[in-house]
Length: 491
RNA sequence: GGUACCUUGACCGAGUGGUUAGGUAGCGGUCUGCAAAACCGCGUACGGCGGUUCGAAUCUGCCAGGUACCUCCA
Image (cartoon, rainbow, N blue to C red):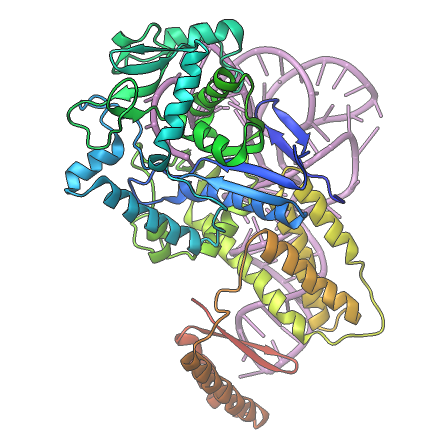
């Protein structure tokens, strides 16, 4: 591998050189959505972050198996219904089958991901389809003495585990604090210790989603699915496990404990976490009720949105910040990103208009190298974007004939954009496929601009301005260059 | 209370112990019949107070403010 990627590992709290366990194969598991509601801006962050990692590793020549789960077995919910799971609760409310609810939101999620140009993972396993594997995991943990049954439920024995291993290794907590600070949840009385977490929960009569097990009719604890499915599809040891920072504790901490308790070692080599998207300075989250759904961004139909935003604008907005920093939502920032992206795309489409010369006045290899350097430095997409703007300036200077570029410069510029903007950052040219109708309408616009050009030659400014103003009013943007006019339709 | 993290110019947002990030907005200029676009130039920032250092926004201490996790959350 020519290029060496360094990635920040939450476990060691530093950037580490990425060395796959079985190159060129790479296994990557990312926590996906719980499908009981519409995906919001917060869901876009990990999806895009790990899409970038997936794309970049693939670009570097690795064969990546990317597993991103769908959580359709609800997690325990803290409310008066005492542990009724979220999917089932939503189902009762809407009088639907649980599977109907999760199917509906899964489709909505996929649709939103398509809009963001997030590639589908290699495998998208459902928790409900892997109950057997989860039961097996629980059995192994019990056989090794790190879990106990109580009233038909099974709990992980954190105290016992911590005698032999380190519970808190990922999140940097110590167990005494956790015991003191653990809240009084349902089932506390069944536990030996408040810090113990559920591996299997006996279903109350109110539950719709339940499965038979050696202990009771019930459902798996919410940390089991990722351990079980990660192991099933990626093996006992795999390279990368990703997710939002809010999952570090307890979810990922518990996954590590489950892996160590069942097989003696953690499954994961690199733990990678993206930061949160905030709104007015605090985290955008379902439970806080301060979220804006992706659908609302696409339509502009939300009181906090001053306009609609394309999936690609949102994608670019997210990529303009490093994945480990927070991103605060604001219309200003989003509009700024939208314009910036459009500037890059305009420059790219202008490459065709550059007239090649025999002499080169720039060194474009430097740009490509800088882009790789930035990507290798823990996926520093904002810096990559900065370099792409340098390339855009060179293109525009060449179009204006302020500098000269050779044929090979021009193809290098095209290559830089193709590799970094399109292939790795996952931007695409939206109106790539015109319908027959649109092509015809486009020709009509061309025709109007020809008339306008004639009017300009004859200095009939009133006519030429009329044509331009009318087209502008319809949403066309007309740009006059030295050798003619170009147009594009905005939005 | 415990554990992490953050504080950069109008806004967004990178970054390294001493050299221009980049974008958006603004201002001035070039180009243009005009406009838009593009190009050139400009603002000269790093929460506060100390310390280390020849030199710190970048390392260290304290203070202030903010965020996340500790409960389902991406």
